Length: 438
Ligand code: PMP
Image (cartoon, rainbow, N blue to C red; front, side, top):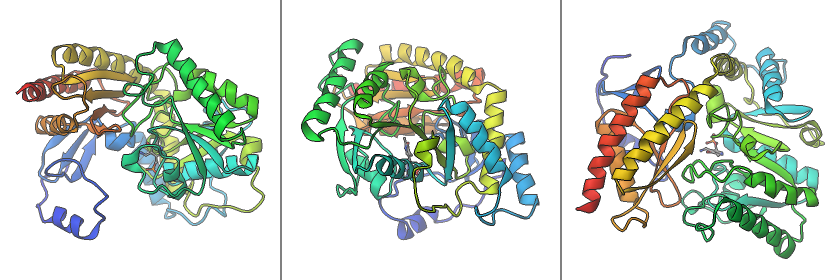
């Protein structure tokens, strides 16, 4: 860990030259300058236990020997990148591994530099394959920040443009708690979502749709966990029309949900394509699409990404993927996730400011409400972020109303660290609950 580094006016400089819509956490934003395992250090020398992992990018942890060594070896070769016009051994090896673990038959992989580009690629493939520019997405979804990705983002806080290059219809199945089907049990909820999908296809789109894209658990939308099997039932309807199904696994992939390697597996679905990013690189910029071979190969023109799948990102990502598979971090996510969810449910029973504790594995959301026990409270979520930070814990925020605190620690979290985080959360929630009543 580095020693404290001198403070300057970095925040003012940030505000002067970076856009206003590039928002920062905390009344006093922090600059992270070091990390090891599950802990990071800021430029004031303060250490934090990281329960957000940079929005799930540090899926494994900071400065993990095997992964850092693989990156260093590539740096030492003198070639960070030349071009994807040449053969790149690690790119091929990583693609082979991802194709193997994808569960998609005859899978092929294309690498990008981000989740957004991965979704752009999947949309390009699906619309070309089906010769349709109609797409279905979930209400309250988040799929990225380019024109098309924003165009299929159904969360108003993250979709600055309503001008979409695609024709998009939004269906139910994402954020259940405050939707019109909230009172239904799981079976009724699934039936209602399927009926909604059918109606959209029959009434609005005439069935001429390229694909449906869904996050198996909405990430930015507030870690919303749909009932298992929902997307399987929806896919049966899509299959009647030949509509492709794309699972956006940018947050739910790589074992994060504990019980499965990919979030969509909880629904008994083998998608036509999955998109991924974030955790794969354990901090490096890498994303991609894994798709059925015939879908991947449907483009009839050249298309390369200058940096997608470059030697350094694929070397790091291959080492990260090997590490998480070797150490079975998925099982760790399942075990410590249950422990945290159970502990947090006990805390929420005593503190009504937390109206809902939901999640799977190490992807856990706390929905914060006002004194009436129901209305969304973004203020309480913001306070909880400050209280946890003051006690040395970093957590995330999200949700349609910005009132969900999101927990997504690195998958290598230890039991002691889980206990430590839970204790800090418990104390902080108690403070915010008391304020909420005052
Ligand atoms: N899809 C999902 C589900 C995401 O959570 C995100 C990022 N928050 C993206 C796509 C976009 O990824 P990126 O920021 O790497 O472009």
